[in-house]
Amino acid sequence: MPNRAFNADANTGHGFAIFMASVGPLRLRLRLTLALGLIDKMTAMQSPLRHPNSNDAHALVRLFTDPHIRRYLGGPRSQTQAHASALDLVSATRRYPAWVVVKPGSSNPVGIVSLSLHHDNEDVEVSFVLFSEAQGLGLGRAAVAAALREAWALGLQRVIAETQ
Image (cartoon, rainbow, N blue to C red; front, side, top):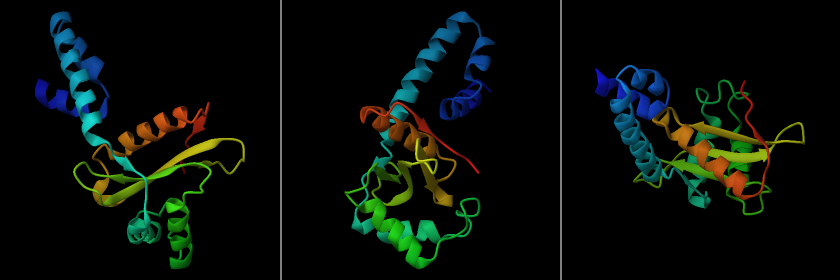
């Protein structure tokens, strides 16, 4: 039982303190140290972002036109709109950066994360979308965390995320 709860919590970060408080102070320190080391190791291994390039256009168009993925994002885009969006993402002239999300050990895109001007024209928004097969693996969390680190490095003071 402890290993199952530990593994789940090390991956999600939820409920770890509650579980650990039930095993006593000495074990709590030991388990917390192990968990923090594991989380650091997972973060270092994941490095889920890279800058997009023209070779990614096909995958990006597929991401923008997939009806299942785009169900709550305004629906699938047309091929023309998707191609224009893909070209925008690989453009070096974007005001705010965008990255493709990749699984560790691969260079193939499984999603995107981007910073962009929010529709209120005041805030910067972080957005991400992943192919279905990449969901539930912690890549979204890791991608958004990496994008936020980049945002702070760019000197942004505020970044929002809006959900539908």
